[in-house]
Image 1: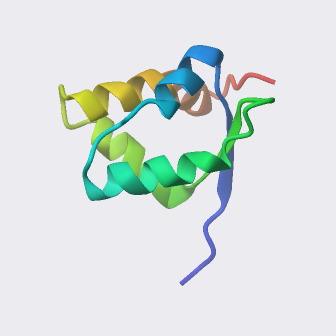
Image 2: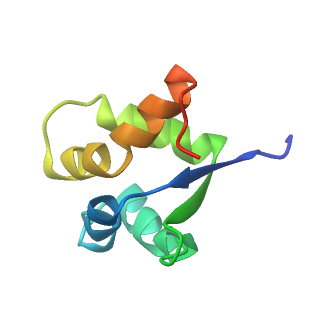
Length: 89
């Protein structure tokens, strides 16, 4: 299997706070919580693989829900910037 590339996101303070609150109890939610330790709190940077980013986008498309809403709060701005080509420096 080819190696996944990592995509760097720089989260704002409110996004970091949402990342650290309880996000849910399902399989992906628990994995996501454990992986949030990859967040550099000083810089707000977190690296996600292509696969993780795909899962986040898929979950956000499922409609209303607590976990989906939290993911949108955390990543909507960053993913929007990625897709628009206007990433924050």
